[in-house]
Amino acid sequence: MVSTVASHNKARIHIIYYSMYGHISTLAKSVLKGVQAAGAEGRLIQIPETLSKEVLEKMHAPEKDKNIQTISMIPGVENTVTLEDALINCDGILMGIPTRFGGMPAQVKAIWDATGGLWMKGTLVGKPIGVFFSTGTQGGGQETTALTSFTNFAHHGMLFVLPIGYTNPLSTNMNEVHGGSAYGAGTFAGSDGTRQPSELELKIAEHQGSYFSQVVTALKVGRAVLASTNANPTDLDRI
Image (cartoon, rainbow, N blue to C red):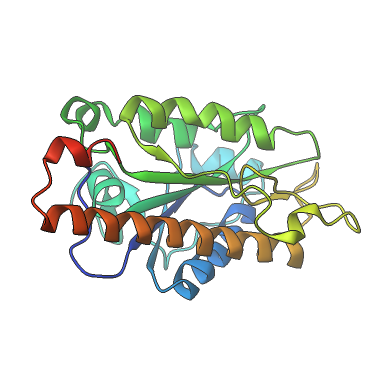
């Protein structure tokens, strides 16, 4: 069973992210620019908070962007989308993941833990996905976050289009400290969270959005061609 895709010609990319202090949110908006520059349709979607308001206040976390829809497990809540809408109704997913001790935080893990029903149906099989990330410091787990997130995608049979490699020369820039790697775009927040994504990091994020969209578009076009030639559906599963 191949994952559901949008019916129009443009590839539809969902940029799904969790951001406590705004670093991932800022990267996501640059990723969106790249998606749109590549001729695809992008949509920003927030992952819901699991911490209480009291805890967030003690952590000095700013309010979430109310202009961006948030995933909700309860249908019909204002300015929200269902988990199924967020994960199914698109041709590809770019997920923004801040690092907690070298892996994804509980807020992001909670989303994947809720996908058992989709897994049972094979709904996400063949869906392209990639990630971008943020850590407090260098060596704080950017690459381990990318690698450990893969287990969730693998069990769903998704296509891991995460590595941007060194397709953008800025990735090898040694003139300044910057996040991101061959595994995807990234930023350093600083140990106190005051450092914001640099111009270089934002350009790499934009590049990832464009690169990912081009791959997803090619995959979508290829699948459409095979479908038009009455290819056996099981052949599509192997793409």
